[in-house]
Image (cartoon, rainbow, N blue to C red; front, side, top):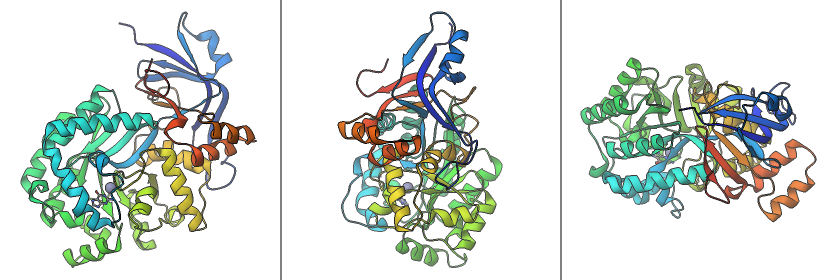
Length: 441
Ligand code: GUN
Ligand code: ZN
């Protein structure tokens, strides 16, 4: 059977490189076509160019989907999010450790049940596609069934997703803790069932230092040493109470990061969520390892964790990615994440340009996660994962868009005023998987 071919026609924007922090993007870092075309062939982009240049080469009878007046971009990427916390978003009035004990751990206990996990996994993926996120690095719970259901749901939709079983063998309810041996055995079984299956990849997921014994962290490091193509994610230096607790639990380690270093968890495919309270020396150690910090602005604000110093990381040569961290985060939307990141930047005197923001949501996150061979940009041979933004999504946004005099202003208006309504459609694996106004075609 011939693969499904289609052409998406309209304005398009994709990054070729980091645009930098200036008001204008670095030369050569942005591809913007007013009347562009993406020729999709199965799950890949077969060709990209000006519509009028591509048109003569199109196969006879090929469907052309008209997105004039919209803006096509690579599907957004969320570098750190907990699908299992979807239903406890917006739980009031706590900082990290109380929030975990009062809301998060009780909710995560429910994921021992397959039916609950299936229900939430489907709802989570629906929501992600509604906000234009086509790839995420996802925390499940410590129950293997929470991982099987997530991967099965993502696989059925043809998505590129990273996920893993949470490893946690102490300092949490019994229904949520594993053991060193079971944690490793379950992770290895899940890796063999799901890692590299079509577009799925496995992320080793020790929750954070306080909920793992040294033995569990050590065993996790051993898996990573033997399989360096796996990802790893955990949490680091989010909250001052957490940091004090880590220094009590690991008195022999020089600092919080030193715990992860000791057990071999800090590598080029390691993502550390938050990393708010770090010294410049710690940032340099993370940079030397090629790791990345997931900046989670809505979560950092919601849990009162602190203001992330993005430019200090850049100065240290440390990769940063952007993440929602739902359910600590208040919004799955990449646009909402950018808005909060901009506001945090304002408080630190380091405002985020729209260029830098949209770069981070797409190619920047893809690079940080070593997925840029497949996603993060619109280019020949890349995965056909695309978000279609609508600058006229609401009456207000239409008025504001009418006033913009440049692409930079238009992008900035989308990043501050945009939300799920501004996502007109989402394509993944060459298929329309979300359409705001109609059933997907
Ligand atoms: N630290 C350990 N677990 C969590 C979690 O689930 N959310 C956040 N924000 N921080 C954590
Ligand atoms: Zn998190």
